[in-house]
Image (cartoon, rainbow, N blue to C red; front, top):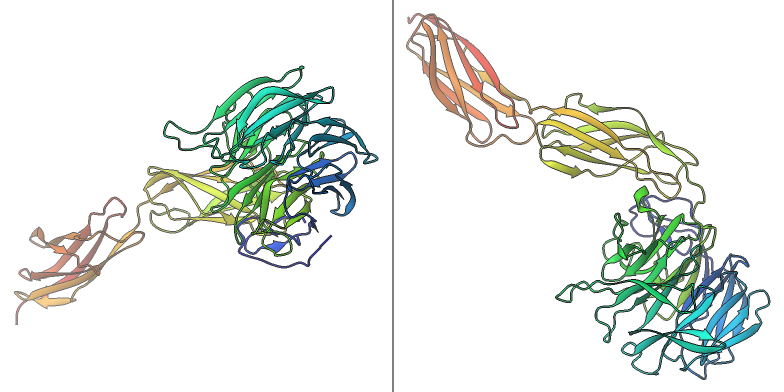
Length: 578
C-alpha cells in the first residue's frame, strides 16, 4: 500500500472536514488540504469490476483484460487497503463479479464460465457454463437469489455488437429474451434483493440507450418500467457510465457523462422531484454509489486539475446538504474516478474508490472514511443590519450567528442567502462563518421598498441543515444633498452668482438633472430659471439684486426612483447702491 505525506494542492472551493487524504485533495475554503485516506496501487492495467464484502471486510477487484490465454486473477484487499489474497483464474481472464445476498459466494466471470468462490476459504466451488468466450467482457449480478450475466457472441467490434442477458438453470446459461446493442450494466439493491436495474451504454449500435428495471423474484425476469432520453431530433441521449439503486430499491441514480447525475424514481423511471446539485464545471459523471445504510451517495467524475472528481453527500436531496468535494491530482494516486469505480461498505463507514491516470493504464484503490455522525445546526439570536436603515445602491450587512453541534469543522462553513424584492429573487455570495459562529452576509439592495432575506445553511456530511431564517427590511431611497455657495451681501442692481453641488449616495445620479430655483424677498416669492446640473454635479445660478433687504434663494432637487429629494437655501443681504 502506498501512503504519501500531507500536502496542499489546487484552489479550494468548499468545506473541508476530517475525512481522511494523501491520495486526494479535500476541496475547502480558502485552501485545499490533504486528508488521510488509505491508497493502494493496483496490479492491473485495466479495470472491470469491484465488489465489497462487508461481512468478511474484503474488497474484490478484477481487471478488464480479455484473452483466453491470460491467467489473470481477482485481487483481494482488506478494509485498510492491504492486499491479502489473490484468486487466480484457471480459465482465462476474469471480468464482472457479484456477491450472493448472504455473502457466502463470489461469482466471477471467466472465459466460457461464471465461477463461484467460497468467501471463507476462497475455494472455487461450482461454475455455470456460458455460450460465449467472454472476450468482449461480461457484467454479473446477483438478484432474486440467482446469478445473471451479459454476453456478446463476438470477439471484435464489441461496442457495436448485441449484448444478451442470461440467467442460469442447472449450471447452463438460460437466455432471458432481453438484450441491447453495445454493453449492458447492472445495479442491485441491498434491502430490495429482487430488484435488478439494467442500463445500456451509448454505442454505434445503440444511439438512444435505455434504462429498465426487472423483478427477479420468479423463475423468469419480469420487466417493469423502461426509459430512453433522446428527443425527436436525437438530442439528449443517455451516455451511461454507471448506475446504482438506493438501499430500498426506490431510487435509481445514473452517472450520465452527457448530463451529470440523474436521480430517478425506480417505480416508473421518472425524474425525482428534487435532483442533486450539478457536478463542478468541467467534470463528467463516471460513477455513482449509494451506501447500503441509505445515508450517503458518492458521485465520481472525470475532471482535470483541481476540479473535483468525487462528491460525497447525504443520499436524500431533500435534506439539501452540500457535498464534500475531492480532487484526485497526483501521479501516485490517479487523476479521476474510473467508471463503476465506487462502492460502499454496508454500514457506510468506508467508501472504496478506484481511480485511474490520464492514460487509463494505471489504477489505485482509495479507502475513504466519511464522518459517521450527523449533528444539528441552527441559527440563533436576532438578525440585524448595518446600517440600521438599508439604502438602495449602498452596501448592507446582515449579521447573524450559526450554532453547530458536534466537533468543529476543520475549515469555516458557509451561509448562503437569497434576497426577494420587487425585482425578483437574487442569490447572494455565500459567506464564511467565523469560529465563534458569527457571520455577515453582504448585499447592495437594488430596489426601493420591502425586501426579504432568506438565510440558509445547507449542512454538510457531519451537520444537518439549519432551518432557514428570514429578515424583512424596508429599503429606502438613497439620500441626496445640495450645497450652495453665495455672497453674504451685494448692492442693489448688481449681479448675484450662486454656485453649488448636487451629490447622492447609492447608484450614480442620472444625467440631465435640472434644479428648481426660488427667490424670496420683501416683495414676495418668485420662480427663477431652473439650473442645469453638470456631469460632475455642479451648477450655477445668476440673478439681479433688484430689492433691498434680505433675499433668500432656495434650490430644490425633486429626486428620482432611487434617490430622495433635497433642498438648500442661501441668504444674500442687498444694500442700497452707493
